[in-house]
Length: 319
Image 1 (cartoon, one colour):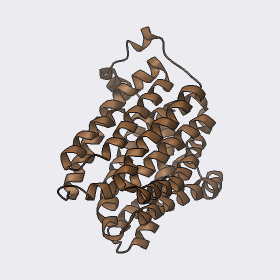
Image 2 (cartoon, one colour; image 1 turned 90 degrees about the vertical axis):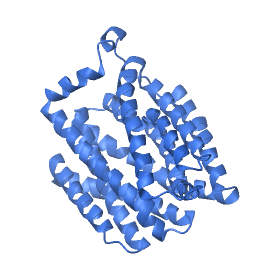
Image 3 (tube, rainbow, N blue to C red; image 1 turned 120 degrees about the vertical axis):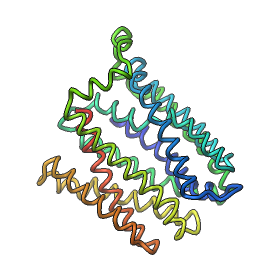
Image 4 (cartoon, helix red, strand yellow; image 1 turned 30 degrees about the horizontal axis):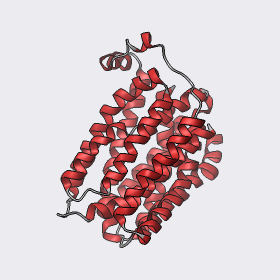
């Protein structure tokens, strides 16, 4: 669990570094991209990510989670460094093909399910928010400082090498192998069999439906807030860092203050309902925000509620 948290933290350190710079890189193109252009990029990237997920599960069962972590690190490192050279809509669009290997979050959930019991899985998933919050604190600071010392594109190019140079040795030398399925058994697993597995398991269907609703709303919110609303209020990378620092503080608060209190008094279902109400009001409030400070408050609520809802839905799926 400790090594998994370390891997998760290194991954999100590079991700938050990239997130701090990405909006500014997307503005610095030969032709200004509209929110519709950004939507096509996100949609194609998500499609590539979905096809990669079909292969990731079977590869992880056959070769082990360590191989998938290494593959994800390589694909993502190339993707992050490649963004630094993108200067048009087409280059951003076709770089999304590399998101085929952008599978660390799913691999981490699967690995965590093999090293925890059902009763401790939600708390373990929430524990992953600690390295994520630390990464949200240091990633934007380091990314913006390197950008100030060099340039936006140089900073983005460097982060790919930072991810590969830190995460690959940790996974290769420190991460224990937990499971694998014999090749004869894994040979019988085919994507067309997934539908029958889902159709016979009502709890899995409900879990996947909740996950689909959560992520679809999250993607729409991210497209609006980061690439439209915040574009009106952010003027430099420091303000982008403030957004990520707010998210980090929100994750730490929900992990160490809110969750210990609520978990003693509410069932997992009630906890999920509370988080969904929080998401509803944060998404609704975004339509009425008219200042950077208001967006920070909305971001704090949305981040905390999404972390809880995602953890609870993941627990139901893995169970």
